[in-house]
Image (cartoon, rainbow, N blue to C red; front, side):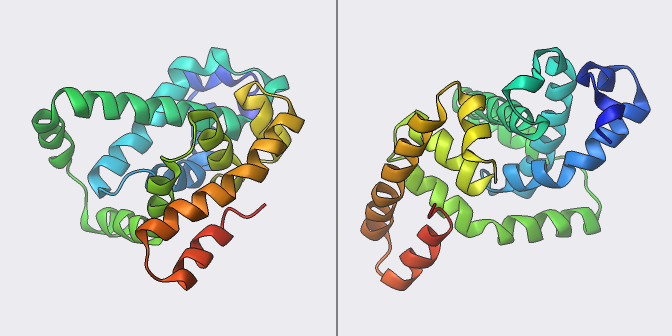
Length: 197
């Protein structure tokens, strides 16, 4: 499928290229969004927004900096951050807009299932707030989004050795944060096992 959207800018003006790109990456983007938000309507909107933003910023993709999915996760981070800023400026308006999207019952049920499946990941994200921004982004990309250390390091503009050192420190900090908020040590172990490297 890579040939259909190489260069990636073809997705903006060739429907077949965009369709292939969308099919290839929809599940990864849905998981990425579901780990970060808990509302099914907002998750559906943000998933669509990530693909729209990908079309607009396709010219920024550089193959040498890592795989397309790593770049797409970067687009997703920016898209979600923009939503958080809009939400902070006008909470009421954002809820009205995102809450009135019309979805059929089956689509809403699939989104709810995805949100349920990612509930524990969202708990990890709350604990990740205790890490520095760079350490958090690196840990997210490797442990939760499934990128290799080298790809995540390239995507973030750091050396792989630096990334490995940061990844070595982060799980202990994350475990300490989870223990402060969760009285069941077995549950903490299960959660942090996801991010053990």
